[in-house]
Amino acid sequence: MFQKILIANRGEIALRVLRACKELGIQTVVVHSTADADAMHVRLADESVCIGPPPSRDSYLNIHQIVAACEITGADAVHPGYGFLSENAKFADILAAHNITFIGPSGDHIRIMGDKIEAKRTAKRLGIPVVPGSDGAVTDQKEARRIAAEIGYPVIIKASAGGGGRGMKVALTEADLEVALQTASTEAGAAFGDDAVYIEKYLEKPRHIEVQVFGDGFGRGVHFGERDCSLQRRHQKGGGEAPSPALNAEERARIGGICAKAIADLGYSGAGTIEFLYENGEFYFIEMNTRLQVEHPVTEAITGIDLVHEQIRVASGGGLSVKQEDIKFNGHAIECRINAEDPRTFTPSPGTITHFHTPGGLGIRVDSGVYSGYKIPPYYDSLIGKLIVHGRNRVECMMRLRRALDEFVVDGIKTTLPLFRDLVGNADIANGDYDIHWLEKYLAKEE
Image (cartoon, rainbow, N blue to C red; front, side, top):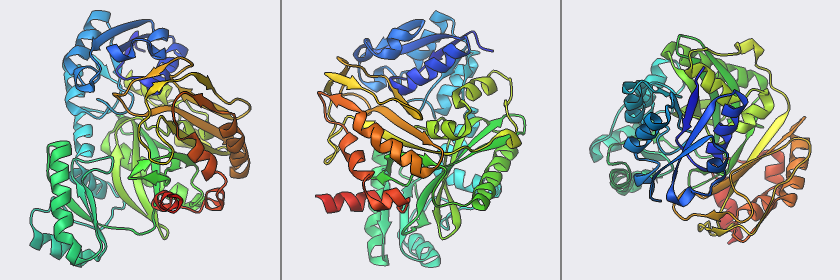
């Protein structure tokens, strides 16, 4: 087991990893920018190192400074959390060159899954069902028209190196295709430094289903069930729930088994999430995230297994602590992402939190790094906390969620709490009857 882990992140995920390390008796080091000197994870860590000014490129994305912090403090492993350098193959390679363990998959696996075209090819080879579309990058209009005609409109153009909804455009008809291709390529180049794009069939009312997987790096793989993250705005998740209200036990076992086998065959090490669009009983691979997900707590709630403990165990060479038959699903869990944003316009709302009170009671968990008097800096992601609720079934879970949202108090800034309070009163949400376009349509009606 590791002696000292450096946590290369900030906010709630840094605190989440820190707690897991403390439970395992592992010393912790956190890095921080000057803007985060008073952050809770900095206060609670055994050691902290300031690695630069507020801009991420000068601090949390500064590989040289993070490696130097490891060497100064004697950290023998790095947990990257999510975002920042968590899916940076170069970072994983550099750590390995310095004999520091990256708590995550190999640089090669990060590269494969980070290139959406190569990821799709790999998924296909591993027996994972994929969305019909181009086999590689599409470079000209003639080729685009041919592929779109073969798979049928509507189609979606996606950035090969993309994520977060950037470099994605929908073409409903052939007349839309030229502009969609050009726009997606331009956006991809600006956002990712790579203007390669590909084409896929656009599903009109799909759900977003993602399967939590783990590999030991030696040919064993398991799945921890699925999460339904269909509540989205501009391809950004508002939260998630597990299990999905849309799947039955047979579908769950089928897709989980496919994913676990694929991870084993790939020789993958650590946590990963294989994401699908699901429509009319069929699953279509869209991407794989080679890191811990924001929504991992709902999986922990229904399985009772700490996924960060599992990450650390696998990275240290201890292998998986469970076999597939040991993983049982208990009840239902829902997570809401609480952002420092206007609940209608979604404009960021940095500032000082004057009062912060979290809900409690049976089945309630709040992952957050903020506190009363904390000043939210304007430089980073607006996520300030996650409310996770667990119940014996979805009905009980929804009852607890309504109560917990009413108890949650964040004063001094605007947050998305009012939006979630509205949503839990909606019949579609209560019935689990929504798809990835539902939230945007709901918000358009409210304007």
